[in-house]
Image 1 (cartoon, rainbow, N blue to C red):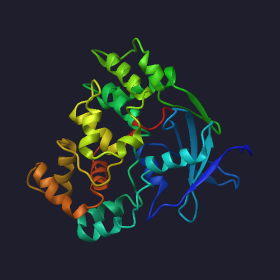
Image 2 (image 1 turned 90 degrees about the vertical axis):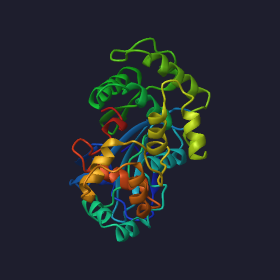
Image 3 (image 1 turned 30 degrees about the horizontal axis):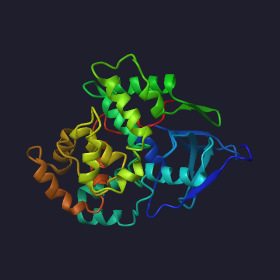
Length: 306
C-alpha cells in the first residue's frame, strides 16, 4: 500500500456486518493480505458529494467491528468517510434494531438470516435518479448492462490496489450526451436535464435529505422523467429514509404474503399496519423482505461498474 494514501475509520452504532452489506450488492471478494491469509474487502467507486470528484475506497472490517477505509483518489478523507457512512447506512444508530425482532418474530427470522445487515444505498441522489431514467420500461438486467457500459465509456476509471472500477459518468457528461446505445425515446433528453440540474446543485444529496419527505419528493418530481415511483426510489434508497415505507411495491407485497403466511397479498393499508412494529427501521425491514425473493438478493446495479 502506498504510504501517502488517506485512511478513515467508522465505528458502527450497533451490530454491523460489512460482508452482509457487500453480498447485498454482489461486491464481496477476498484477496491475499499482509499476513498471507485471504481477507475480505468491499471496493466501491463513486462521485463525491458537491464537486463530483471520482474516488475509490477499499473497505475492511476489523475484530472490533470498525470499518476501515483506504481512499484511492483526490478527495478529503472527512467527506469520503461521511459519504461511505451514508452509503452503508452507518450514519444511522442501529442499537435499537434488535428490539424490532423482539416485537415481530418474522423480523427476528430475517435478522438471523441476514446477521448484521444494513441496506447499501446509492452513492448519491444523482446516480439513483439516472438509474430511474435508464431502467424505465426495460428489464433490470438490461438496464444494468446499459449503466455499466455508460460507466466504462463515459465514467472515470479507478484503480483500487489492482482492482479496476468505473464511476458513473459525471453530470457534465450527461448534460452533453447526444446518444447512447440502448437509450430510446426521450431518455437522452431526460439525462441531459438531469446532468444540468446536478451541475447547478438541484440534486445535492444532503440538501435533499434535510427536506421533509413531501418537499424532497416534490423537488425530485420536477426533474423530467422522474415520476412518483422514481422519486420514491431516490428518497428511500439514496437519501436513506430509514423509517419510511414504499408505496405500490408489488414484489414487496409478495414477500410479505410469503413470510407472514397471509392468505392473500396485502394492500398498502395492511403493510402500514404490519409496519407499526418495525419502527424506527421500517425501510430496513422492507429491504430484508426483498432479499428473500429470487432475484432480490441485492442491488448490484447500485455498485460501481467492475
